[in-house]
Length: 140
Figure (tube, rainbow, N blue to C red):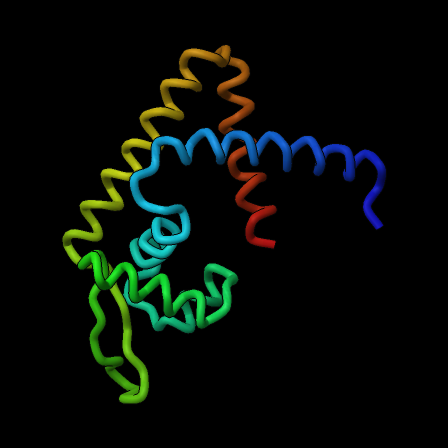
């Protein structure tokens, strides 16, 4: 059972992250779930739909729908698995890579402007250190 201090921090963090996520989503042109799939393929290379579902912590059926939508938009391509003929791999297309880079630029551009405008140098340093902590929590 978490301590009351940890529970209070968790509640404040969840609220703040939710607000920030909703604000950043205003900059999006690609739906968040689809952008997450493109990002996973960019970071990890070609993956099976099942591996993508595991990576994104969603049901395989949900990932199959997301993959289908991204294929319809020519943002990803499918190819045969090199060692298992029953499987296929999906990977970013050139158009998918370009769309992901543009999306990241929009998001990072807004966030960088907000950080620069709203935070002191000391707060920026604290935020930079906090990013690694948030990554550790997300990986748990």
